[in-house]
Amino acid sequence: MSHPSRRVFLTSLATAAMAPVVRGRRVLAQNLPARVDATALRQRIEALSMFGRPSAGTFADGVSRVAYSDADVAGRRYSIDLMHAAGLDPRVDPAGNIFGRRAGTDESLPPILFGSHIDSVPNGGNFDGDLGSLAALGALEALAAVNLRTRHPLEMVIWSAEEGVAFGRGLNGSRIVAGDVKPADLDAVWNGMTRADAIRKIGGDPGRIMDAIRSRGAHHCYLELHIEQGGTLEREGIPVGVVEGIVSIDRYDVTATGFANHAGTTPMADRQDALLAASHLTIAVRQIVDSEPGRHVGTVGRLDVTPNAPNVIPGVAQLTIELRDLSSEKLTRLAERIRLRAAEIARDTKASIEFTSSNHSAPANAALDVQEAIERSAGRLGLASQRMPSGAGHDAQMMAQLSPMGMIFVPSVRGVSHSPLELTRWEDCARGADVLLGTVLEMDRA
Ligand SMILES: [Zn+2]
Image 1 (cartoon, rainbow, N blue to C red):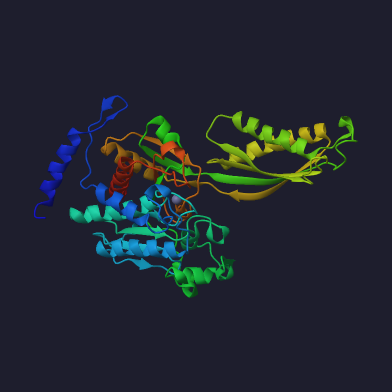
Image 2: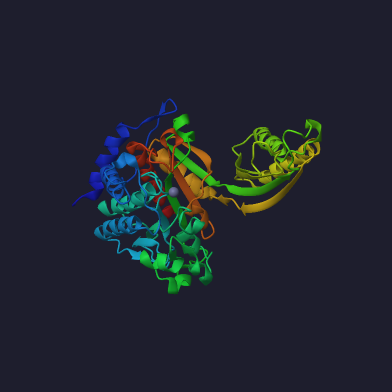
């Protein structure tokens, strides 16, 4: 086009006139110099959904594009072709992550990295990861369309094997880039193939796996647009979530031990019922979690009873307690309160209760300046935003180890995710993509 700047000005006037009302007042939106093509974004999300779609199904039937499957390979091929067409010269790193780069005016600066993943859980939805990946591509195309060159180089990424399906652990591609990898990891076997074979299948190079590691400071910042996967934004009517961080997860394996005995002949007063102790403890977890203000959550999600027979008093009950919050200190405090209560329950039920810590993952905080950049970007589009934790894990938590990190959430209808019913409205997809683009430009100034 011959006069990109004039075109942009007219676009901006037209859109400012339609600035949405936020919290009862009209916001003067200082518009972005470029916008992501919302029609192309939708068409690509729909096209990508073909790879892993149930046979004779439709978009509404969701997708099974499990990492390293044939569907994953096909979906990656489709995405790489789009990146080629956009002039991004895509390349696959030794871990199987797909990168595409657009030069900045100062190539000595570290790149702004942004993207997501396109693998899914079995019977998953069409927005988890796909939105952030294709919006990243759309943002780069939008800048090219108006000849806008950033100072920092821009790099988009489609992470490999984000969902924790293959090899039983999530964030596989970003984990390697963050340096959490040993050559012996490549010998793990899942679904009849070694991890080395799996990485080879998607175009990676297991022999050079250590070359995929990037150093601290390799990026100016990392940004990821993602669906919320919970119902907060939709319930509050807020279009943009600004992620404060990805929560810490503490997990405990708990064993209540009583005495298995005849359910007909043992008087009530003489029983040592392990399931009774576990039941009291399950309720106590809920009460203690509810007793403190905040957005922390606690779950007893697994219970195994031995011998699990109708006519035997349960001798052993094993359960897991999982606690999540942005504050590790709060999780430690809640666990301590649960242990104290467990001691009382053990005394009252004459069972013993033992705790073993089985998982601790540190929280990954989003950088404050990136959170503010996302808020300014939403503000320029006249969109209200709200800060919130992410209760789910994301590649962004790995990238937080290398550079400042920030995430943008858009509403999930009814808070459903990891299901064919997963849905984010097309207008919310488009808004999120523009907020991502605006945030890239905000961070380019910093
Ligand atoms: Zn995801």
